[in-house]
Each structure stands twice: as structure tokens, then as C-alpha cells.
Amino acid sequence: MENKTCIAMVPSPALSHLIPHVEFAKQLVQQHHDLHVIFLIPTLGSISPSTEAILNTLPPNINFIILPQVNNIQHLPQNIHPATKMKLIVKHSIPFLHDALQSLLSRTHIVALVLCIFATDALEVAKQLNLLSYVFFASGATTLSMCLSLPKFDESVSSEFLDLSQTVNVPGCVTPFQVKDLPDPCLCERSSETYRSFISICQTLWLVDGVIVNSFTDLEAEVIRELTNGDNPCVYSVGPIIQTESSSKVNKSTCMTWLENQSPSSVLYVSFGSGGTLSHDQFNELAFGLELSGHKFLWVVRAPNEIAYSAYLDGQKEDPLEYLPNGFLDRTKGKGLMVPSWAPQIEVLGHGSIGGFLSHCGWSSILESVVHGVPMIAWPLFAEQRMNAALLTNGLKVAVRPKVDESGLVKREEVAKVIKRIMELGDERLEMRERMKELSVGADAALGEHGSSKRALSSLALKWRNC
Ligand code: UDP
Image 1: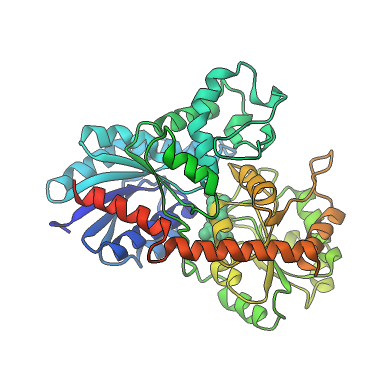
Image 2: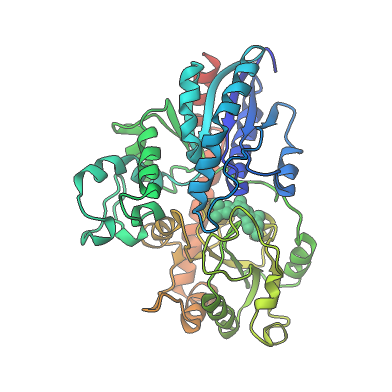
């Protein structure tokens, strides 16, 4: 490590953010043997077993340091938005980060600091220590383009975003976005801390030496072209970066054994990411809708909660299966498999019996579905997921999005309807599958020998090596 060029990476303390950071680091050192990566990980409490499992299987040219726990922000409000919480944890870890880097610099040739989007406060450390600075943007190029254009848009409007009557144009996107589909902070009052802090992240994107985005040309062609050619920071599109194997083996044999006994493309996989939850009423409507559809399903069940991100950073302790409607388990015997809280998603999506994915539209879930050519039901919950859902449905046309009624619910009949649209034979399903297949081929090509993502990663490595 001493003689090698080293890149320091600061992920935020969320498992689903750590995963793409680690996968990016693995690709970097695998393709460029002379580079070394060290993770500096901010923490609030002790690290979770799932995080530990990932860190303990890192290859020899990737190291990690767990920064001391921040203990002056223990009593945060229970419903604090995960983005705000992650940003606060990083902010309070900055002195530890500074000390750790300074100590490493005395014996290691660190040239760049790569920050998670919620770790942009650490840019000041990069400047102080004279390091190049980058943001690893774990979502798509569309959201990145929106974030880069937001500071100007913020100056140009005076009302709250939700009061705007017009749609919002994102540079490089043909179809404009509905205001209600913008990321969560844009729907908050503009004087709020959540909104101001989001704007400050977006402004920081203009100050770094480059932004590394987890996307690829065929998925977001126009936006990537706009980002890489226009008057923007240096953007490196290096995706799709996804896991090849699930980091956690929880429920693996149950899921895989059950899938083995199902017919090809016959099962709908239902999952809301690493911590998404549905309200009690919505949970029931989904359960009855799955039953009503008559199709087979594998549902990663999480206990309902009125806050959609309730299990995002802290997980759940209760048994979610206890919340299923009376008699549901009996009535769906042989039709559905319910697993509590977690499934080995990458293996599930790669199984031939999966025919569709009802997803909360987290970016990693989307990339994993694309790589495996699985059409989706777009059911966004929070963060930038509504923008991702709009991209999948209006832009790429590889997903269907259920209608939400006046009470804010997707009713059981609507659930059954969208399931039938993607699971039953017909032109719509066929076309979605064809388009997904094309994207999957495009994903392969982007990472292949002369692929756009591979070239982008090489130019980044060259820049770092020449420092
Ligand atoms: N994941 C998994 N099993 C689950 C739920 C999630 O393996 O039951 C993984 C999934 O494969 C993905 C990540 O967790 O890599 C979720 O990331 P995403 O960006 O989709 O959503 P987030 O969790 O950030 O909302």
C-alpha cells in the first residue's frame, strides 16, 4: 500500500450506499492493479453485521478504517429523514476523518478523496490536505443532471416548488418531470433545513474535480451526453456497478429452493429496498392485490409503518409476517413465498423463474433489474425514487406505474391490474421485456473491453495515477 497510488473513499453510513461504493472500488483495483483504495467509514453506533460482512470480504488492495463513533448526535428525532441523518453523521465525523487522513498521508500516497453524496461536507478536508476531490453519485445521471441544474432553478423561482403549475425540465431529458416526482427535499418548504442542505449538496457538485455516476450510455444516453459535453463538472459514467453476489445470505436457501420449483418467468419479486416500508392500509392493499392477481410472488415483507423510510438505517426488530391479513398465509400457500425483511436480491433477480419486479425504484435495484432484463412495477416511496420511476415508465418504457387514488393509496384492484400487465402474455409485456433485454445487452457492452463505462473508469484511473 505504501508505494501505490491510493484513493480514499468516504461512504455514508447506509448499507445500500456502502454496497455500490465497495463495488466501484473493487472494479477499480481489479482493472488497475497499481491502485489501492482505503475506506474511511463514519458511524453513529457500532457497525451492523451486514456491513461487517461486506468489509470482511474486501480484497487485499482495499482497506478500511472505521472512524470513531459520533456520540454528540445520539438523540435525533425518530422520524428524521435518512439523508439528513447521514449528512449529520458525516459532518460530525469530519475531525476524525481529517486526523485519519493526515496520519495516512505520512506513509501513503493518497491522491484523491471520493465522497458519497451525503459526505460532501468533507470537501473541506480534501482542500486542506491538497487532495483531488470527487463525488461518487450512486444514483442515475437523470437525478445528477437535476441536482446540477437545481441551484440555478432555485434562483429562478420564488414560490414553493409544490405551488408551481409547470413541469420541470431536466437538462438532457426529453420528457419534463412533474413537480411531485422531484426528490423529497424539493417538496419541503424552501426555507427548511432539509431543502437548504440539499441545495448546498447540489452546489458542492460544481466544486469537486469530478462526479462519478453509476449509469451507462444506453440507459440514459441523452442525459449522459449532455453531462459529459456541456458546461458541467467532469462527469465519469462508470456503471452499471452492482453486486455480483448478495452480501447477506439471510433467507437465501428458502428463496432459492422455492424459486427452483417455479416455472420460467412466472414469479413476481416484491421488495422495497434495504429499508422501505408501507403504511398499514397500503400494506393490506398490496397483500390483497397480490392475492387477487392470481400470480406467483416472492415478497420481502417488512412490518408496516406510516413513515416510508422507517427501517432505512435502523432495520426492524418485530416479526413482519404477523401483520399479514388474517388467513393470508393459508390462502396463498403454494402461490406466494413471504420472507421477513431481506432476500438475496441479486440471486433472486438472476433466477429464471422471475418474470417481474415490483420495486421501490432505488437506483441499485433498478440497475440489478436492468442487468437481469426483468421488467418492473415502479412503486416509488421516498428520496429520488419518484424521478427514477418516471424515467423507467415515461422515458425507458420498461416499467408500469400503479395509479394512486385520492386517498393516497394504490388499491388492491390496481395492484392486481399492474401485476397482470407485466406478468401476462401480451404486446405490452413483450415490448417491455424486449426493451429490458436491449438495456441488459447495453449494460454488458458498457463494461466490456471497449465499452464506454470501462473507458471512463480508465481515464479516471489515469488521472489519479498521473498525480
Ligand atoms: N437488497 C437485498 N435484499 C433485500 C433488499 C435490498 O439484497 O431484501 C439490496 C439490493 O440488491 C440493492 C440494495 O440492497 O443492492 C438496495 O439499494 P437500492 O438503491 O435499490 O435501495 P435503497 O435501499 O437505497 O432504498
